[in-house]
Amino acid sequence: MTPDELLKITPDLLARAILHRREQLAEAIPEQLDARQEELDFAVPLTNFAKEKRDEFDKQINEITDKCLHSQNQANLIFAKLKSDFQVADTEHKDIGFNELLQQYKEANENHHQQTIILEQMNDLAIEQFDKISSENNSDSDMESIKSQHKDILDAIALSKGSHADLLPLKNEKEHFNNTYLENEAMRRRANSRTALLSQALDSSERGIEHWQQLIDKGFDRLLVNAKRVSEGEYSTPALSKMNKDKTPQVDRKEGA
Image (cartoon, rainbow, N blue to C red; front, side, top):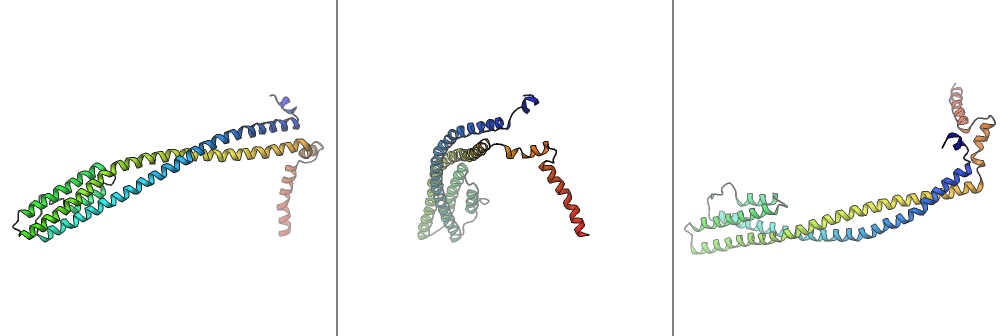
């Protein structure tokens, strides 16, 4: 469009073109809003379900983990008591005692394979300790106490191993539902954000339709006041504002004097 053609466009024609564009947007947005609402209706229940399942598995995992650590702490206490009661010298595992293994187990959190290896090392250490004590000259009553405590240690370790074996499928399930939750939560956020933007656009379009329709209905005289003033040789509104602004400092200086 050439400048001459552009100048031939009347305010009424321009207003009607803008109004038509606003009406087109107002007609198209509701369909898009419905689509985003469908996405929200689909994503929200899936997100909530995945989060609930993830939290359920997380609770079960924490309970089993606590039970594992409790069993190992009990085994550690019994192990230390046996060693103290019967004055057992350090074995070939002198650099790795039960305390150290327990600490390694805690530090290997979430590493199922490593924790399983450490539990086996605990079991081997308990057997070695029993063999060491049994080789000493102990009374029958002492041996009964030793066997009983040794059994308690192995039972505690076995309980940890059994409980620990239950953790792996639970952790896999938790990971699955956590990934599902993250995917659906991302979908929910996108749909929610787009819904908000479309709602704002619809509101803006509806207000625009009302504004331009009023201008068309009431005419453009009030918009052309400035143009008429300039055509008659007077100053435009921006020019008058600038002149008044330039006069203000001069008045202030006179009053200050």
